[in-house]
Image (cartoon, rainbow over all chains, first blue to last red; front, top):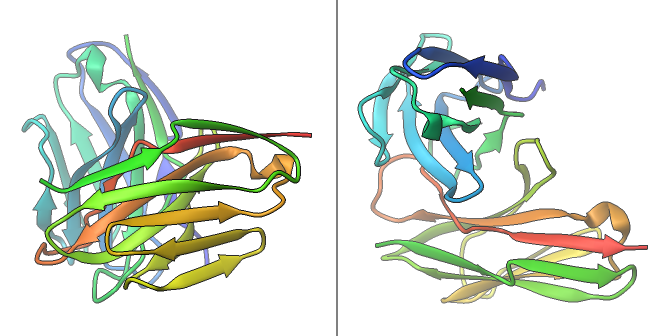
Length: 113
Length: 112
């Protein structure tokens, strides 16, 4: 089975812009979770989508949003970018049921100038 | 509040020198404890899941164990290619979904 894919892999934006990141989960997985990883804060949970519905959300401002499509692919959007949004954004997919395991993609490295 | 603490923050070993990494957790109820390995600039790679105290799992030079308060990742006769950051994460009972709470990680360096 193909693994989790994320696009783009690298992105450079300026403050105030918005950005959309994409994640394609492992075939058959219905849950997609997003995490932000920074040197100071480690891996922080953003939100999870299951069957096109957000079912869990972390403590991030409303500038961070996401959605999931009927084929389980997910997008994450960050509006009005701030310097502190520079991070590695990781997507993880899982079955979303029972004792499931999350498998991570390679991440999107976002740099905000 | 759910909390995961990993120690040490960094560990340097000589090739062949066995050691253990620690992950202690404080949660209302543990659904599962996960170990991942992460190489620089890459996404975490899944290693093990442990569900109940007393459970152990092994893979090559790695062995993970679980008690009611902590988990250990034992590395036997490590090689330079085992150098990476090792992350511990928990899923908590009573929370919907697959959300993971991560520790800060242990950065392992194995010198030849």
